[in-house]
Image 1: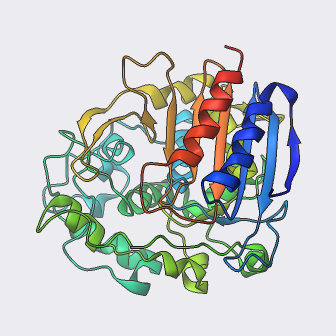
Image 2: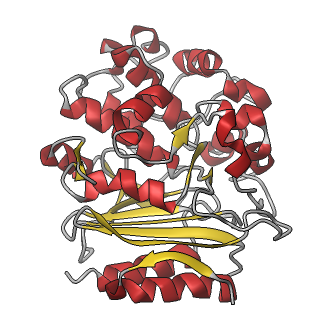
Length: 373
């Protein structure tokens, strides 16, 4: 049996049981799970090892690259600015970023970035290897890029580009990089150990990601939108171990944290803008997430997706109105504002999918059943 550390309120004992089962039955090596209810932490657990050789214990302060769970952090930056009246999601991007209005992009609105519907899920000009770490280079390529489909008509998962698109708007409005804005306006006020652009002083406690059998390249067929999306910008799981990847700001993919820090931040959304003694935004600003933008088959993921502002939404017929997203390999965050519930799972052994797996599903189901509402 893997030894589990931390705290679990008795009401949520099934979450701990599911977490333990992930090590015994679902192959987890090192992981953490956290849950907040009505703005307070009710589950904060960790266990296993932070290296593939299983020689180093996963500790309370272990952090790992969570891939696209980072997107919820980038989205929250934009939501905070919208709540303050500094950006309007229904304004053309060119109002904040004039150079963007090239090659048929003059009518793209910020909401299209938030809902993966801008038609910019990848780039014709290759962005490979360390090119991805050069913010100005990536932004320059996106300025010249023509949309691959009519913006606003469908979603196509912007696997890497979404973070730079949102991040450049944040930079134009605030004068700060999105990593800096996120740190000073969100992470530090909430005492959350989550980083977009991770300093070398944290490297000693970063867990080793155990890559899946194949990288994202080769997804899709031929010249499909899916194939082109994952061809450029190109990402390899093995890059997560390099200094360049860790230090860069890649707001769609390279956030480093653990379940506790994800919950400390996303509780803002679950709890009407207030979390752990801090008011980050208004409740109305949080509800904007549920303004449906797109509902249909995603051109990249090739499955039905419903997107609001920056988050995936449960189908309209669902009994609970949740918002969520997750990261390549398995990390996830699920938020139920009606129940004031937030659930996060972070691990180091990656599965090959983009849309979660049985490990997070079992934890989410256990927490949702026990939330009492």
